[in-house]
Image (cartoon, rainbow, N blue to C red; front, side):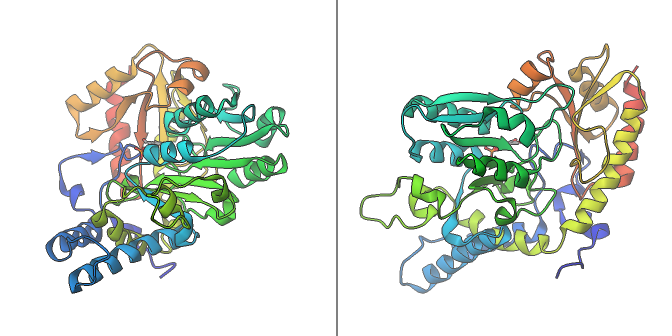
Amino acid sequence: MPGTFDIATAHKRFPALKEDQVYLDNAGGSQILDDVITSITDYYTKNNVQLGASYRISQISTSRYNQGYEAAAKYMNASPDEIVLGSSTTQLFVNLAGALAFEEGDEIVISKLDHETNIDPWLLMADRLKLKVKWWVSEKSELKLTPENLKPLLSPKVKFVACTHVSNVLGTIHDVKALADTVHEAGALFCVDGVSFAPHRQVDVKAFGVDFYAFSWYKVYAPHIAVLYASTAAQERIKSYGHYFNPTKTLEDKLGLAGSNYESSQSLTAAVAYLDGAFPAIKEHEGKLQKILLDYLNSRTDVTIHGSTSADSNERVPTVSFTVEGVSSRKIVEDAEKISNFAFRWGHFYSKRLCDEILELGPEAVTRVSMVHYNTEEEIHGLVEVLEKVLP
Ligand SMILES: Cc1ncc(COP(=O)(O)O)c(C=O)c1O
């Protein structure tokens, strides 16, 4: 029920949080909801058979799987025919890149602020179809993809544009609706990586106006599975990978490749039920968490926050990356681990072009703290105390 989500008890819904560890690497992968774990155990215990047969248990398994698919589609405001589940966002984008058709000499635009998952598949596609690649960048001072920095790259020759909704390093939220409008005015298709957005805000592909959108459920409190949306119109550009005797009507027919394991797919019903109406409370709570950390980081003259320095929840999600003058990102993490149970990381997090070419950082790149709604204010105050001890 919308409006009834209780942030205070969310912590109790994640059995892993009983471990002696404070999870602040959630942009890497979240912990799993209790009902999702129960659902998977139950499926393995009672329903682990091949789908589509006429015997009783197979009928139940098929129905559970279909319900998971329907829940996942409804969750992102798509129809079941417009989504495909698969092992990872990377896998789904690679599948899509291999199946899309464009004319030789057409142009595509790819952003350098992205995780390599939303870059490499399109480079492969460009190579396969002999397309020209144009790079979309943002000045180091701004670090945001906008219609203004996109427009100079667009022309009638551009047929496909890809970018991230939220960078997994910067945490800044992009206005995908404004970007989608700009891309569509130029007559191109728009593909968005929603992986770092989805754990924090409601995904609504129709409101975003995108043609393709993917995210990874294993970062949204569910198991290791991902989803790709392609609008019915955009699917006309996709050739089917399905066996020749199978239907080719839906996105699952075209790109599914039997890639979504049954137990995970059916468990999405439970994940979606938990998140129903949850995001206003999640946004508010995460705003408090990020403010505690950002206030501390902003108060230090030796710290650079990479991404928005504002704690405004309309501006960013609580994925916060920073560097400290004279101290390597790796040392910060290692020193914190010696004195605490806080789990966060250093590195480029596969946004290597961003870290190397735009942020101009060394191989140890940033220290990243990535919070989600089950983290508590107490935990983040504790983290600040730890940082205060390990930073110069
Ligand atoms: C922004 C972003 N995009 C894509 C990915 C890749 O997702 P997957 O592991 O499902 O391929 C990640 C993983 O960390 C990510 O953070």
